[in-house]
Length: 180
Length: 400
Image (cartoon, rainbow over all chains, first blue to last red; front, side):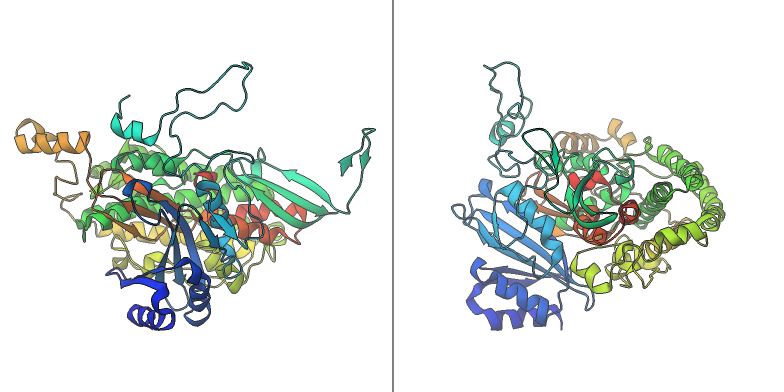
């Protein structure tokens, strides 16, 4: 099955749920799926198209690009037995960034999905152990969001009861004056 | 166990929770794992990471591409050239650079394979030390010192080389350096035999590693293991063969695989990989082409230093590149490469400016930790260190 055939089959099976599909010149199939149909597409990819290897899951925050929906989740899937590569994009809206877990399909999704919650604050439904991964428990905010303050953070412990962190620089401030 | 109001210890379950790390020498950095122990047997293992979190992915969103390269060194700090290469290949794909000068690719290959040998030497030494064989540790460090010296000769830095740049490499190899690499290539096979004579048929080593931390083919795929762990489970997969980059298709080398998927097989695969890397370096030295060591497009790569005094155009290009950086066209790309620990790749989203809009590292150690904790279940407490060692985690790229 070539990339073209995979693309055509997916479009035939899922129709309008696949909003974009292309085959890149570098040997990968790139599709964009509506979040409602994500699990069905993923199950089809795993069971019928032999995508047996989940390489990574990435979140992207498109806040600065004024795009609708604001977030993207990107799945990098390979078939090591059949030598195939597909990249699945899923758009998530700002008001309800909820995505189903693919942990039951690929166990490798364990850490990346926890990272999605930790770094972007997405709700991943169906993950067995959903809690912060890299940031400590009880941390406020999600660092990889584009509107997360960039340089100075709250001081967690201070002997001075009146202490307040004032110097909070946002990414806009840095972009406006990188030398400040 | 819980503490009652009287301050007495009270057993409220049949298992004991044992904390291991983050300051534990055999966790290879700051990795913490909570072990649920039933006597000597691990019932479940819960990983806890993030102690080395430095926010490299966030920082990269505010740095120019060229500034990101030294940060990639600090991810997998045991084989920095491979991180540099993965980052530069992705940036080059976004820039639409199809082909680099042959000499640049060959120098990249030599550096990456030296990095792989160096990283495997550290792994071999520390892994053997964890299991109780101290001699190998001292021997492996001795050979790694040669690689660090070679790094210093070519890039001025012993560990964080930042040698591979977008469009080529930082500077050309000197004849002295090439002589040094040749000496290393002649020196290392005998040393690998020496390590093997200490370990491969050593009954204690066999007892401690055979049948420990076993992972089948299907499990290894399902848990997203990569690199030597995948190959030790019998999956013949190497990105250098399957998606050749940097002219890896011009070299003859084998991809070692084993069938049992235990700690011993991972040891065998990595030792054989060191031999194969040595073969690749030897071929690259023998066939090293002449010519430029980076592309001549001065919009991407700095013009030669000596032209700055004579050519106005060079001066302008130099100024623009240093003060403003490379503008990378809009788009996103992911290029998988074979690092020392497995699949290393950067997913970069560019918005057309001189900084990455989003940079995500696919780190083999990060993806390998859940699978590693899976292996620990049902193992003896003494085997936990053997299992951690056999995955070869580097916390720099786990926590980023």
